[in-house]
Length: 396
Image (cartoon, rainbow, N blue to C red):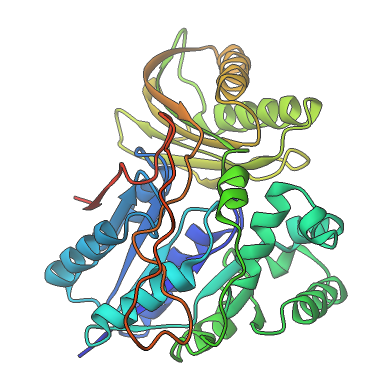
């Protein structure tokens, strides 16, 4: 019996992880066995820890997107099938990647169609970010590189899932739906809210097979790589220790994210996402918080220990600036949060970089019945490249 495979695309901060975990919970409640796979350019992921909290059916592919880590993706899927025999595997791609129809969906169908049934390729959208991006999107190829990447993610979709429908009025959501339908007519547009658990329309859209396969994404890979390189990646681990008395991890997180938002806003740096996870040493409880826009407040997604004497914090930040600038932003925000909560932070590990040129393992074009693979011409990779240097594993 074939396993249903659902792959989620969408820009950073759209809510792919929440969508994936909530959808998995609802499908499990309906009697299905479900596994999930996280994916990132980095290697120490808040999303994996969040998805694995209370579930053993979690894998991850790190160090590059699924398209460039196709064999790692297959290996993780195989491990999950051997371990838990899932009926459904839901996988979220890196938020700065696109062209998944040609580089993941078609190759998977061609090579392993007897093992997997692929659901319609879904791009998750934050309607607030979409509305802010719209003027730049309407400039077409004259828009910014980030807008180009964002538009290509939408053009690649068979289903566009408008998440966070609870954050806007009904008439505003309707305007977003109409705009997306007009601009991207090949995709089915559905609305839902992962935060409130209203995913019926999205789950219904996944019930079918991926059939929107009659066209190729017109994608300039050089510009795509340039767009990804506009974003800096920072993965940092800190040990937090109370100085005089217990501190509130959630308050530390909110203060940190507020400082990050203010500094990014002052410097006009677009925030993809900033996520952090704190684990209290004594109780093992997790506190997770996130920020997706410099004009918004950080949100505590998971409240763990209300007070703590110390623990370890993992930070994943993706911001449109240089890596050195992002490190300074994080340093300054940490100092503000430490002072506010009377905490001493000690660095325990860090990696900062910009993604290199994407190099898909396969790129299969529509209408190709010969089995011919369309590889891209060779291109030099920078020393900061994370594409092609990652790994895949199932969470312990």
